[in-house]
Length: 276
Image (cartoon, rainbow, N blue to C red; front, side, top):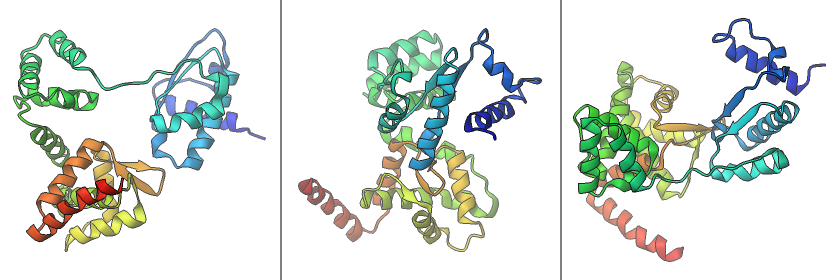
């Protein structure tokens, strides 16, 4: 009977064959050949799926110890990996926010006008805390190359969100409701202190802002995931792909409230802090 290891090898071959014609499972067993595997995306799995995947990959790594295996993981899941892998883990690299000096060196090293001006702008506007997030630094550099430079935190995040929303299809009015859907989800998750939501709870929230548009909520969700605004957590949950985007959308939701509702929401913030 086929083992999990056999099925994993078949999966590897199937995924790599379009780029490597003639590849067979036997290739991975040749000790004279060394591969480097980069494994990411485990935060999109449920707890049960993550444990199963870790178990399969760790077994494969132990049986093919001459290859190199690199796991990219949120820190909160590292304990699960260590419990399963044990001594198979040889090194742990913790990726910290980018220090201002490193961000400045990176931009200066590009030796291009857009990067130089971005460096000056971030310094003048005191926005290097945003540049501490690599994904945001890359997005700000992309915007700078198009002649758009950071003036404030809100402007940077607005450009990021607007650029992503601009890539969403206009069919059946999906793009027209995408921003409102993000804000509704962000506020719901903030007010309930939820890092993610089951789809069974998220979809009705989106339905409230869909109005009479003719698109399926599932289609909007797929578009938001494809643009890296939302992310899957397992098969039945979702979260924001980046906490900074969630915070920005939450602020937009707060700003769009009626005065009485906004005042009540603001009054509730210090009350919550007092209960911490």
